[in-house]
Amino acid sequence: GQQVMQIPQYQHVQEGEDFTTYCNSSTTLSNIQWYKQRPGGHPVFLIQLVKSGEVKKQKRLTFQFGEAKKNSSLHITATQTTDVGTYFCAGPGMQGSNYKLTFGKGTLLTVNP
Amino acid sequence: DAGITQSPRHKVTETGTPVTLRCHQTENHRYMYWYRQDPGHGLRLIHYSYGVKDTDKGEVSDGYSVSRSKTEDFLLTLESATSSQTSVYFCAISDSRRGGTQYFGPGTRLLVL
Image (cartoon, rainbow over all chains, first blue to last red; front, side):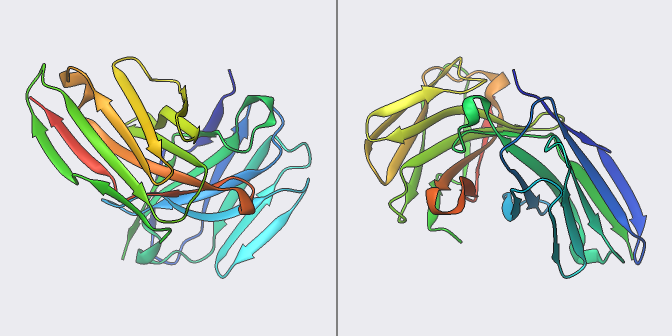
């Protein structure tokens, strides 16, 4: 079945450093979504990328979708303690259904103030 | 938030007892999901529903059943709880107007002794 892999599994940074997490799918995706889960909280939708090579920014967060639509990345510039949490990528399941997502295992980001 | 509530929020039960978790939405979305989240495994889909009385299995459905008699309610039942079902359970809904992005409830922490 479809697999969505994320690396790294964990990342610890000093406040102000940059952070990047990578997502790779075993199949071509119609779109990719990113979610953030704060410690003790629930996953919260951040963004969806649809087009090949698409780049979207949300303040200090930059999201990219690969040209082949099989990989994606999330880059945070100058991390802050508020960025702490687990970042998940997710892609639609087989048969191209947008209603069943396969989630990566996530990257846990910790920030040392 | 997307108007999703889960009950109970915390539950401790004993092995062999039945447990029902409830998910309630106020958004009238067609698709609803149950996930479990465990360390090292990320979010894994248990069951999902694509309409009233229409449900299907996810990747970890063994030991779980679901029911959806109304659009707004999606129930997850553990017929005979086991310690391996100790987990955090999240309900989610899918917004068809936003390409299948999912919105999660606050979660239920279940401990099976």
